Image: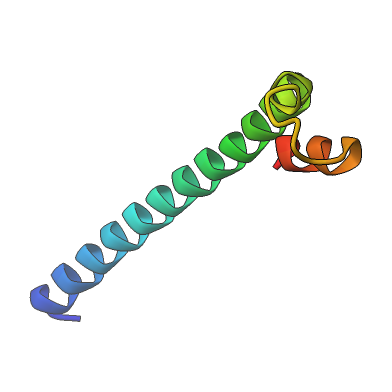
Length: 66
């Protein structure tokens, strides 16, 4: 393996690790966002449902949770 091949292999390895790291961070951030959104919906859907009286009770709860 000549020096250029070694350089390309090391560069590819560094870029591979950087891509894996960014992807992992993005996945973790997305999961945290979904969990936080579900928590907020569980906590505040009744408050929001009270502000949309033009729907029936079940529809109001569903729309407020979404």
